[in-house]
Each structure stands twice: as structure tokens, then as C-alpha cells.
Length: 249
Image (cartoon, rainbow, N blue to C red; front, side, top):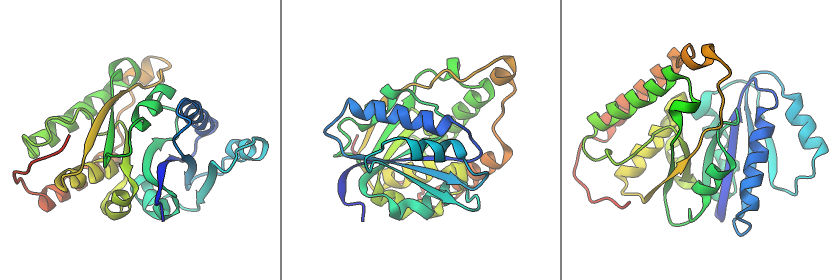
């Protein structure tokens, strides 16, 4: 089970059209620059409507055992979907990838280069203000400040909790079942930290995604996502109260 050294990219989506295909092509472009790394891409549809664009792409494109498609009949949320499929991945490390094509090919190169010795590679987003809706940028900043406050000063060095992140697959299998939806990232980062795991941080870059004033100013985080992250943060604070440890970066 997921013993081969390499990276499994799990691209999760629901009710998208061609964006998961664009995401897949960006990953393939990146991995062509790193030919010595074994990889697979798992397209994971978390419920919602059938995606005929993805089905056509898989049927008409030559993909030599590197891409597979998993469909869940009912939506389980991000954490639940990963918990359902994590045993299906075959590589030592897994990269969590939103299917709406948010990252550049360079970003995938950055998080996968020299990944082998790390328990987590955290890709911190460098161009949030230019590419993300401002309410979501503010929400990400507030979450980062809150986590730093709750676990001060131990997590102050982490630059981004919801960027493009790669984890040792065994850690995901162990901790993902406790996460709630969009709380999956902190549900992995914080336990791995308190296990004295090895962390590495690299810059990543969002694609330009805004289309106008509405996208820039009026796209707020969904209430259920805020609730899930808050729930997980409370659970993690109870599980991992402050204690001094020597940590590896």
C-alpha cells in the first residue's frame, strides 16, 4: 500500500467542467520537467453531476497508466473524499490539488522537487492579492493569524496553511478521517508538526482567476467552510495543547 517512492496528485472537484482537465495538463507539464519522479494523477469527483468533459478526455487521450478517475456518488466534502480514496493511492507522498486549475505548472515543480525526505512540503502562495478575491485573501490572513495566536509561537514560521501542499501518504491515511471538509489542511499540518515531522516550504503561484469586479470583491468564503475550519481548529487545540519541542525544518 502506497510504498513506492513518488507523488500521487489527487485532483478533487465537484460540478466543474473543463477545469480538472486543465489542472491535469498543468501537472503533466510540470512532471515532464522532473522525469525521474514517479507520479500518478487521480481525478476525484466528489459527488455532484457527472463530468462528461473529463470522461471524454480520458477516453480520447493516451495516458500511460498515470491517470485514473474515481467517482463518488454522494459528496463527502474534501476531507471525507480523501478519507474514502487515500488507500487507493500508490505512492509515498500525496499532493492535494483543487480541481479548478488554481496553480501554475511551476508550482507543481516546486512542491515535488526534493520531496522525498520531508513529511510535508507546504507551497505558500506568493501572489494572493493579485489573483484571489479580496474577501478570501482576508479570510486566509485571519486564519493564519488565529492559528499562530492559538499555538504561539511554535507555528509562526508557517507562511500559508491553505496553499498547494504535499504530505507523506501514511500521515494522510492516519489523520484525514478526523478532518472536517476544508479543515483538511490544518488537520494534517498541525498533527504532523507535533509529531516532529520534517517540513519544507516553497513558493507557489496562483493562476489569474478573476474575471471582474464581482469576482474581486464579492466572492466570500462559504459559511460551511468557515464552520468546518473552526471546528477542526478547536479539536486540534484540545488534542495538541502547547508543549515545547525541538522541531525540524
